Figure 1 (cartoon, rainbow, N blue to C red):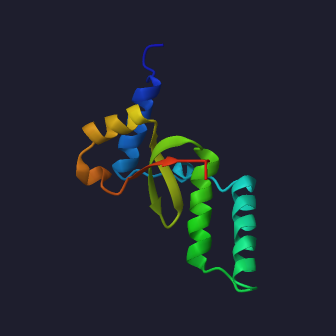
Figure 2 (cartoon, rainbow, N blue to C red):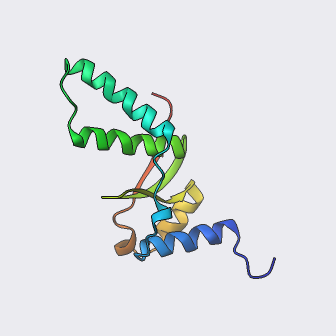
Figure 3 (tube, rainbow, N blue to C red):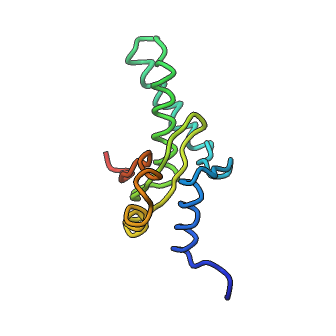
Length: 121
């Protein structure tokens, strides 16, 4: 259809928008019931190990963010940003990551974390 972007072009346009500073609330990964369940379960385990003590707020946030990626992008290569509001996945898949690395200036992508979100422990 004329005038519509192909999926790689849409992905590149979205990445450019986000990396250019135009971040929208809908760009953040949502904290779903599954994310909450996993995080609560892991914090219960931590409390047992701490003999009733509470995990630090930083530990809870770190686990929540790890679970956001795990639930929304299992076994995928991703490029993502983190800020005080959550996680934004900028790009997924090795081909798209390569495209961002080759075409987006370093100054715009220097805060992007790249990694593989493994479900195998």
